Image 1 (tube, helix red, strand yellow):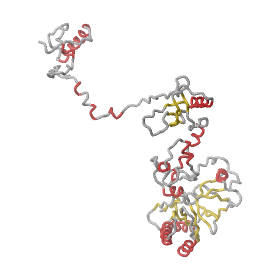
Image 2: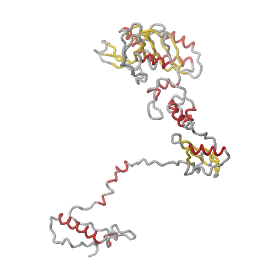
Image 3: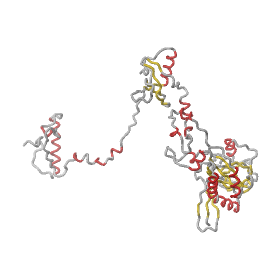
Length: 443
């Protein structure tokens, strides 16, 4: 049996199609499973009242429906649900007691939910498949009509209803758009019911996807399903430079990741003093330079301009800064900005870094080539002629080393003679007690 796979709601759905001789795979979804929900209450016994079902549609759209017919539904089933008008086709994404928890989290009321008609029949899936095939062509034609009418809007995506009676156009626009004439043209050209929905720049970036400045895939296209407003105060709490080019994402708005750690920064600097207050000392007035929030260290400089390279900021602990501010309010100047008794200087951390690249250098074998000894034959190398002004390589060859005593030299020479005798096959009539000449240049 040959199967054709279609994808809707981040699921691959097999559809029996005996007319096709070769199986195909058609992808129409984001394919990232960012709307997937882990059912951690799946092992609980199901009650008869658990008739609420979460159903997923194209992209990130999902809805909650009631199962009045008590159909045995599981995750991944294709069902026909109530729509206005007609019916729509979706995929079951969650069942059981976790659905009311998700509805409470999303703020969806229990009353007034639409109902599930049935599991999708073969004719329902076939009509649904045909509508999916026409979405891409429909979006291209819609964009051409928008450019003809010279309307300042962009068609981002098109979604057909399961029964092919309605088409939803998702558009992006910065200004208010009067698209009454456009809807008339769409209805006349496409012969379906038209619905227009405006989305933001963040939602469009999630649909398009891309790589962020961190080198990873965009969070909005990878896992984020809801978007919160991001303000510049989140960057101020994290002591970041307010550069719009660095703080903006690919959508042109402030990056969503600015909200990820802002609560940790707010909790860490609850007891921090105001950095706009200068510190009066006997050395002069010190101004705020920079802050290390998690190490609880504030740098102050006697030069007010932060662009001066000659300014030497001094690290001061937060508790010391608060004490100096308290003394200044009493009219007392601190003796110095930082003292060993009541300040905590910055400690340098040794990370035991090793340069592993230097160990595998190309010339690592050439460095020890001159230090190898001639193990064959027992012959010593002839010393090279000494140049003028060059120190001798071996001081022992010019009269012996002064750092060794006579007993140590005798023991080393005795071991050398034994090694040479073993290499030459035990020959030689030289006495073991006979000392070799320490200077080979002297005869």
